[in-house]
Length: 192
Image (tube, rainbow, N blue to C red; front, side, top):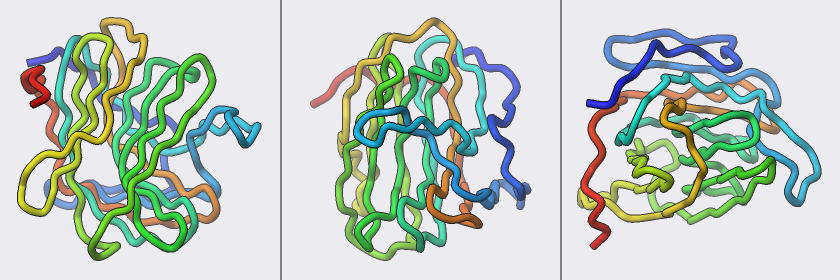
């Protein structure tokens, strides 16, 4: 089991509460994580419940939200510092739900998106795994199989922060229910 510390909020949301095993969060106005690339601005005011984690790990997260505004998003984050981090999850863009990954290295963000089929409000399950300097992002498909979405490099010290994240860059009040959060041993390194 990876060594962990106590979870703390980076930018505590205006509303969050535990409901049984679930965490329900509502976003503040115009919150996001993005550094510079293409848009020329830096935002670091998204809501991130950060748990310090030492060593390799896998973090599985199941969540759903009432997406409706451009760039509404929810998912998971791994953070080294304000200039080096990864966020991944679902994002509402072009009138549809997408699975997205943003990797920020040396204060520059990149963005990849993949259209998701199905209802916008349907729960999504992702898995984020650290293997030394690599982060593996996977999406659980409706049949239960894990689909590799991205394998990314990020220079990381032994201890990083990991946990659920949500933002609403063009609005506020996105309600997200994180119904399952599991942090544990990393899955095997096999990709195929």
